[in-house]
Image (cartoon, rainbow, N blue to C red; front, top):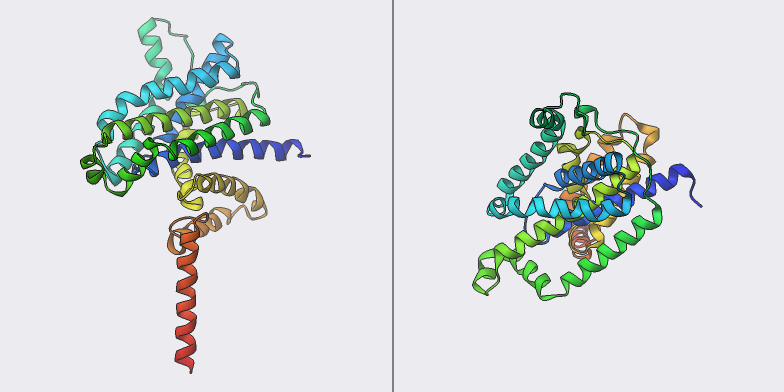
Amino acid sequence: MLNAYQETVFQFMLRDALLGLSIYLTLVTGMFSLANAGFLAIGAYISAVLWKYLGVPLEGALVIAPLACALIALPIGLPVLRLKDIYLAIATIGFGEVVRIMIINFDKIAQGVTGQPNLVITNGGAGISGIEKLAQTWQLILVLAVVAFLIYRLHRSRFGRAMAAIRQDERAAATMGINVVYVKVMIFVFSAALAGLAGVFDAFLARAIKPNDYGFTQAVNILAYAVLGGTSTLFGPIFGAFGLRVLPEALRFSQQFRGVLIGVLLLAVIIYLPGGLINPAAWNRLWVRLRGRRSGAVQGGG
């Protein structure tokens, strides 16, 4: 049995796994989107506000927050997804910053619109605290299992084959009759809903949320789940999320250097296993390289 601390860490591992799957969807469709942190914030704040002011429970938030994120993602995705590679990354980082700044200034806007100078909803940069810890471990496991199964089925469908084709060559996919814009927008919307779903659990696990929890650092952390685990299978980002949640806890004895150690690990994965740790092909390429160097050293010594 896990103690209270261990169970909390495990719960956040499961939440991180949902975020890993949210960025996995866009990456396997060839979209370098970093909007997940923004949608995580939207999901968390919608859940917290609904619970605090309207008494909406966790179950209600699990429906409302992802749906709201999907509806927000739809009009954003149509123009933004015409960008590619680093330009898409920059645009989606910008979206996340806009969300963060809007949350900070939301009360001022609401006060001006309603004429109520004492109106407080998001509480600016201080955030919302006193949220009841309603999320249970079994709920997180169930949601993660259902999401992973749906993504697995999606990959095996015609839509999944269209995703793979777009990742390989977007122009070739279009000539094959695939509606590239439709597929990319739908995946972006699904990814946003999934990040919003993780946001619900974030609010009801952390019990206090602040806008700065969802800034650029969070966007990079989510990307790191996919970098560490890889995207060759859907288990890659799950493994990456678990690993990057456990490592800081395991390295608590070295507070000064744990950030450096984790950075070195990620750098080593990027250099030597660019496909991530859960990627047999990447391991095979590394093994071939090491064998080649070893045999070359033996021949040179002979």
